[in-house]
Length: 196
Image (cartoon, rainbow, N blue to C red):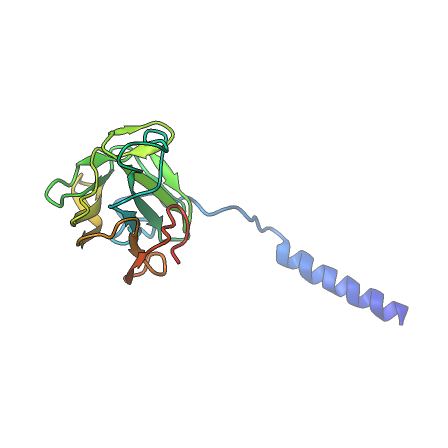
């Protein structure tokens, strides 16, 4: 009885040892935007996932609670992939006008897999600890788009575009589930978190 238990344990140890031999478990390489290959930035890699354009009760470092007129509009960007995406400097733009594809240049940063980035559409055009775009959102409806300048030829391509209509006060508009093509209104907005 004892001998067979020892034999089984020895066999299991040998199998596990051979499975783990010469293998390294490192995190995947970040998905770098490039001119080709599996990690290239393509349409839908990053999406505008949720936004609030009217009656915001959300505040930031430049629009503190008690601000006359209420909180600040915001846009949530979602990384639909299971890779970290490096948003390189001078490559990424967000806009509320499809005719102005370089309206606001996003700073260099990384978005983790299946994670969110908040851009405050408050008109301040600066980056402190948060990103403040140079424009606000039109509560009566307009365009929203994310553009990328390819390093291979510097051509600016659309990564995600949408046109929205009149918005409800204090209600966000977003994808359900995150990253999908289905859009819904949310009476309980979730900037930086999963839509529900």
